[in-house]
Structure formats: structure tokens, C-alpha cells
Length: 119
Figure 1 (cartoon, one colour):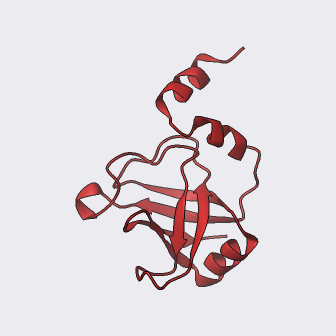
Figure 2 (tube, helix red, strand yellow; figure 1 turned 120 degrees about the vertical axis):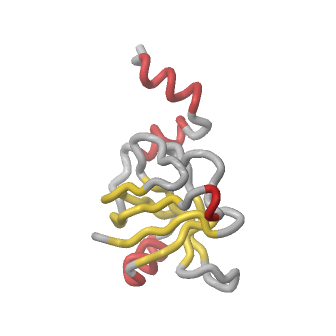
């Protein structure tokens, strides 16, 4: 039987089923995650557990992108920062490129956040 918290999350979070699948994954890298405020070009809604996006080394469209999912336990609001967030990448190459860069940017129709790699 599902607990009430899981039932509420699945009703509110459009990515709830993906979030559940990601809970079993080990992070490929860990970083301090900043989601830009909406007034600074960030998202208009929270980054929910299970949400993913394109990661790039810079803002130019010529930069290669790699799909990743932050391993969030609770939503991250625009303008907020969370330390030591694990990330799972679609490809091992993406995790290696971002780890070696030390800092990368989250892209969703523009730059919406950044991650400073800590591990």
C-alpha cells in the first residue's frame, strides 16, 4: 500500500514515476546546484524530483549537451540552491565531460541554472 506522502507526490509531481526509478541509481557526479530565479531567466516552476534537462559547458548553442537528472528528494524552487546533489547522466561521456569541467550549466530553452562539481 502506498504511503500518503507518495500518493500526494504522484498527484503533484508530473515526473513522479521517473523519480521513483531514479531513486535506485547511484550518482555519477555530485555538485552544488543553483536554479536561477525566474526574474534572472530561470524556470517558472520548481525542479521536481525526476525532472531532467540538458547540461552544457557554456551558454552557446555550439556547446555539446548531455542529458542528466538531478537526484532530488524534494522540489527545488527557482532562485534556490542545494548542496551535494547527485546527478545521473544518460551517457557516461556526459558525466566525465561535466566532472572534468568542474562547472556546468543547465539548459531548458536557455540557461536556467548551474552546477559546481564537488565530487
